[in-house]
Image 1 (cartoon, helix red, strand yellow):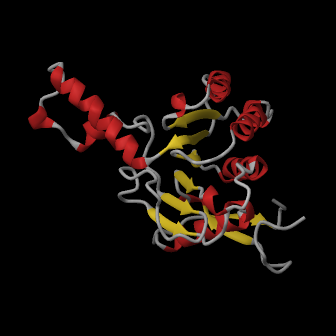
Image 2 (spheres, one colour; image 1 turned 120 degrees about the horizontal axis):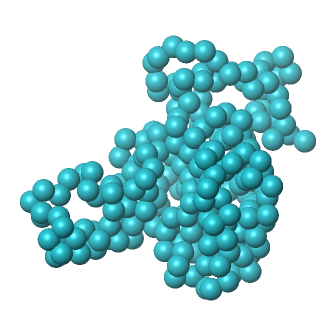
Length: 241
């Protein structure tokens, strides 16, 4: 079994706890895979690492808008996530972004199941983008604001950034501090366009089916190198992914 980081035996990984991001977002590019897969095992391992590091929020865009992933594969992946006992053990709350309600009924039912199962959890938050697109999210937000203006609940001359944020899918969440992209395309691919304004962006150049904990840790080192404050470190050792 591989390690979280390809390091020498006596060289443990060190991350500075106070410099860890509060919200990590991962833009997954399934289009570069020969057989599009949601790779649930990797998803679960990264969530385990999120909990171990103490990162409050992580977001995965597992199904970009209008992606061609078979319905059966999506249903199976969501079912595996829903039955994962780690969600209960660690009180992990699942939320879902995007136009998932436009997908086949079997997919919608699975999403409702995992949301309902974890709705009262008070631990780390895992956001899952399903049929999600940042431009469509902004279109939906503008539509909501337009309806509020029409209903005279919002003054069009007093629309602020805060009002826009309140109408996004991520209204209740802080914007990500770090965004990681998979694949070889150096683009956000319309991922969290509004919330990415001040995020650090790490282009991993690693396909999703090859993405492991070491890639996430490399992104965290990149993130921490952009910050100056001094704080204590976390010793991750060589624990396998």
